[in-house]
Image (cartoon, rainbow, N blue to C red; front, side, top):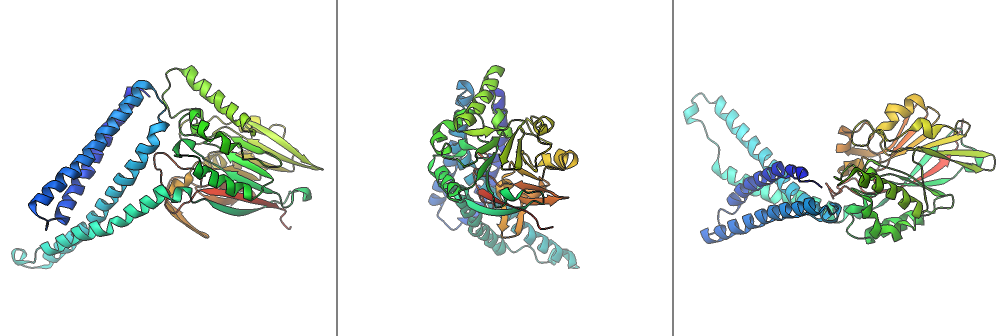
Amino acid sequence: MTYLRLLFLIPLTFSMLLVDFFLWQLLRRFTASLSVLLRRRLFYVFWSIQLSWILCLWLALIFLAKTDIPLWGINKYIMRFTTLFYLSKLLILILWLLMYGGQLLVSFLKRIKQKNVQNAPVYDASRKHFLWRMAGIVGTIPILGISYGNLVSIYDYRVRQVKLSIPTLPKTLEGWRIAQISDLHLGSFLDDKALQKGIDLLLAEKPDMVFFTGDLVNYDTSEVSPFMTQLSRIKAPHGVFSTLGNHDYGEYRAWQQDSDKVKNLQTMKKIHEQLGWKLLNNQHHLFQKENAQLAIIGVGNWGVRGKSSKEGNLKKAYQGTENAAVKLLLSHDPSHWDAQVRKEYKDIVATFSGHTHGLQFGIDIGNFRWGLGKYVFNQWADLYYEEGQYLYVNRGFGFSDILPSRIGVLPEITIFTLSKQNT
């Protein structure tokens, strides 16, 4: 991490102080009935906490920049605190602004209707104080929601059952069960207990095969070390197949030398091998069962935006699979489906992706899905079908260290059952 990357702390610090300033104004009015002494003490406590945290944030990141210690080791704690408290504060302020602004607008419209503006009723001060209190009370709801998402929902794994009807499916593969997990982002986990819980759920399903669709880490391969024992438990009778995501290339960390970044990627590939996972990095695997041939194709990260967006080479990976009865593709970024797969490889019956996390916020109940992800990605969660081709976007097993919280969109283990469509 270089000192240049610390420049982001300047606008971040300004934004944090701005949020704190307005929140203090809200707190002052909410506690207006307290004595002067208590309010003065509250002032010192409030600003001591806010300024101390900002100072600690600066010192920690300056230390990381100077020593080049991997960012993930401390960042997961920093971002938990920052997300929990500052996003909660921001939501409280937005709530108050909506309430207060609405009341001001109503008051203004009433005054416009009066012929004699000087004698028209003005904004009621008692209402103003009421709104301050309501914003403080109702504002605890997002705090509780974010706290729950930060501490509980991120480990509330859901096993989703999905049926894939494939007209060309050989009878010998009828009823096959394939598990998919994606986006572990191991550097965001505080320990391996939560990881163990999710893996236990996966193994209890007894899938025939397991797919992992990228983003094992946040920044570099050192994040994997504490979790090797748990990860090595992920096995299936017919193998575990994996591919790389955008975070696996080391693009989100500043390296002292280019050779360090290259070594990091080499280590990442070795880790997949040590775990017993078959890494399909622009490669394919042909599985033969009796007279049936199943092609599992895997590409490096390929997307329309972001870092390492064109590492995948589907043309190379596809060669040699032409005669397979069923072709399944592992591609981390779902934007690959619209941009290339559906246009050029119409015989790839299903693509398995991740990457989006469903943006970790939304409403995801039964067949009803709404979330921020739909405004960023064309396909952001669950199953999509167009002209004989499927795309499944896994919501992710782990979570982002930038936003270590899940609200509504829960971590996922997907179990696919293959069946032959009746024609």
